[in-house]
Length: 346
Image 1 (cartoon, rainbow, N blue to C red):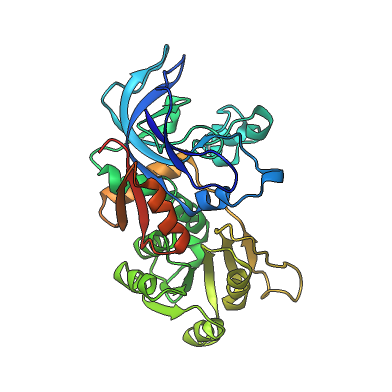
Image 2: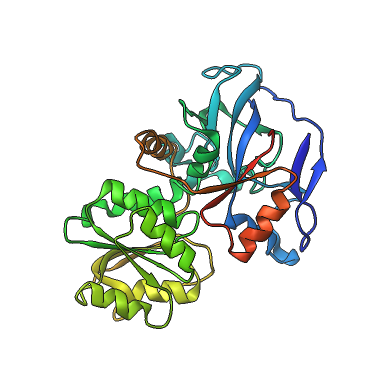
């Protein structure tokens, strides 16, 4: 089969031919119908050689949907031909967190060498994907594969970040979304669907600010030296009750702290390497800072239900598997508006 692989540190990903996978006991083989390209993949391919965390070559793609093509011995609960989405942050399935569906916070994954597809294990940028356990499959139930596949990360991650802040996003409250890319433009929609808060979107790119307005942001602000002051002015200098930074660079996390209100939630979702000091005098009183990761299995079901209800609209650009390297070039250059989706089997 064809697969897109990162084969050598510092090189561009390549489309290569690799052996077709076969499901072992307990495993499920999917024919991939869509795979999402994520900026996290750019971060992986930017990692220096001396501490690169994964074995190479690595088939990319941690967002995947597909059709069940074959079942390993002992598999129940799914059947050949089922259209499913893949829950990516695999865990041991047995620890306290996994028992609650929070495999994104598995207590034993590192110890046992369990890695997500595309982030250590072979990923979805291929004609076929081997899934370790049927519990990591969620029925699509009629959702379009191309618009559904980004929801497995670009939808699940902002949903997981936003959900704990819902009690603070009451009428009259403000939520700020920093970075309106693949995750941020879905985050705006989740906020509009689940809260009555005013949503202010911040980005450096005018096209992405236009996208933010299209998907429901009440206000947009160009990200520059005056952005934090503008946001505070919009809130009567009260600040925002929840701030979601989908970039995570040093300038954006500093902006997140600057626009937060007393008792605010600050969620640093992006992996841009920035850090925000926490302590008396650094932030408004009782502001909390978190760095969430992906989401739970139950939350993926909830995100897909939001999509079926018609309140999430993922903006996508589609590419064939042979065009996947071009998609990553455009993602690196910041010219993807929304989410890039690879369609490996046409």
